[in-house]
Length: 170
Image (tube, rainbow, N blue to C red; front, side, top):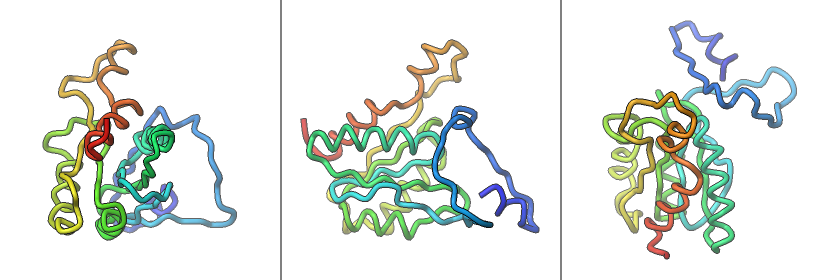
C-alpha cells in the first residue's frame, strides 16, 4: 500500500502502527501493489464476520483461533484502508455469516467504526441476525503506563467475549 500511495498524484495520509514493525509475513514477488479501498478476507468463516484494520486484524485472527476451539467459524476481514473502505466486501461477508463484529483500537464513539457499522447495517440489514457488535478502546486518554495501556485497548479475549455475545453463546 505504501508503494501505491507514493505513486498517487493526490496527497495521501499513510499511517502505520508502531507495534506492527516487527510483524513478519509473506511478501509477493515483483512490483506488487495493493490498491486503496480493497479489503482482504484473511480468514474465511461462516458463523460471524470480524472486521478490523491495522494491529487489530492480528488480534482478530488470534480471537478467531480461540473461537474455533469453541466450534465457531469466524471470518476475519482486514479493511486495509479506511478512506475509501471496501463496503462491498464487508456486505458480502455479512451475507455469508449473518453476524458481524467491528474491532478498532481507537475510541468507539464518533469514529470510523461507527461509520462502517452504520453503512453495513444499512446495506445488509435484511441479512443480519443480530446487531453488529463493536469492540473498541476505552474512552480515556491513552495511558503512558504499559499495564494501563494494555487495559485500555482491545485484546483477543475481549474480541472473543463480544463475539460470543453477538452469537448468543455462553
